Image (tube, rainbow, N blue to C red; front, side, top):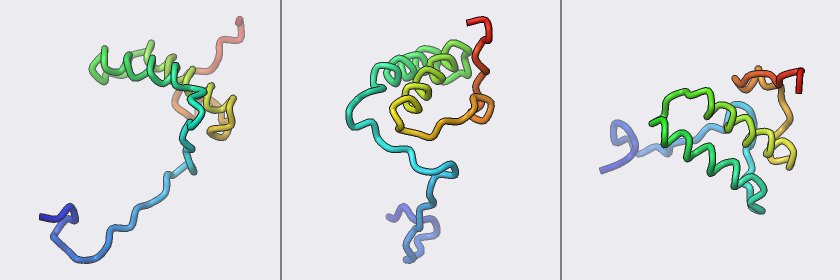
Length: 86
């Protein structure tokens, strides 16, 4: 049995991510934020919960701060803007 649909013998060619590379966090700089986000997603059974989106934002901010991804605006990442009052 093959993982290639139609059992064709040609090689599958993977495509790169649409927004560029997403380097691994080898030093574990953002492990805590990632684990909190994953725990939240499991708790809400994959629903798009606002509290999980805030944890996702913390995780992505950590990645941006540690140069593990390019800085981008929150709206481009599907997340709410920072509250200007803070």
